[in-house]
Image 1 (tube, one colour):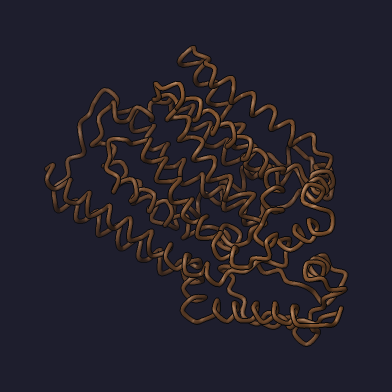
Image 2: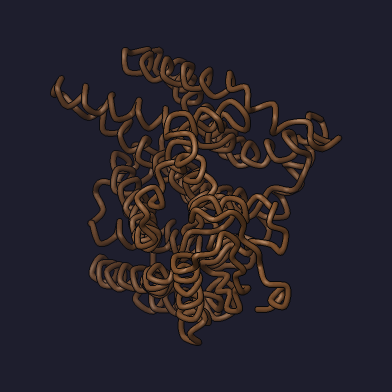
Length: 477
């Protein structure tokens, strides 16, 4: 039986990696065609050119938002160095960062499994993530969005890895380094967005409660991280600009409405993610893997089920809450991306916790013959193929790439830059973008009104008095 298990586990790992490559490779290729968006990307750097780097960040912090780390990244985007090429490199770094963070987390949670298994596990989550994420462009290509959601998501996973590593270190120097990096990641995550701020506060709080309730311990590392959390939260909430994001909608600030809406939204999203993806088949395969691990190898899953479930639901619902409470509207696609990301990671962790609870005194394994293993993998492959084939996201990325839509967009954007550079006029009329690859293009462009914010930012960045979208190009694609 062990021979069958080893054979099909290796085969399954390669299937998982292949699934990841099927969606990751086209995303990496699409990065070559990415460009800065007229929506926000130019505005940050235009402000820097007008007022200076520090003053521009202070302007946003004082007048618009407390996202101090997001402000820092946005005001340091490649346009600061007049580099469009930087926007082609950043998605590659981001995509690699997501896969690496997933791999690192799974490697520390299941240290007895092979590296191939950890890459495969990261591949499964990434594949599932791509199938149903709400917006690809907002996750990986539009900088104004990904610095406030995807970047802190990566940092949060890496923070969890550092915490796990800290308690396995004996060298004082290594502990100091890990603590320093952990503190920076908390600082960065809290300063990225309201969504990630709540996630980090919940994780730090849950860590403290768990250590106090079940281990009766408080150590210097915990105290240091709590201190950084409090100071970072103060820096965020003390921003005068936060008030500008609240009160714009009469439903904003309604706690009951926000609480109910968050859980209703989470319920509808969860149904779609569970029953319209191959998630349940992969969950069953994960149970088989867990059954082959000893009790000691499942040590990181030895958390009370009620506690893990409470934290899991809390982290998911908390991400939806700010949208309803702050401005009284449905969460944006980039927020839904964030919720789905933690939904997938938490789902597999919760299965591990539940399995460990019922099996901690019994290491018996599921009895599977070679035929049953074969049947399981056939179901996984078939369900994954059907999900791949029917996914709107997969169809979008392959269509934009294969049909040349992304390449055409790249040519149109380069043509725009050339018009802006060579024109000796103070007022420039630009044609509308006809090819809009929505996998990488956030669908918001300059307008026919020269006083629109995007027009003013683009004009300011290129040293023009005004930029217009040609009237005869409005609405074309």
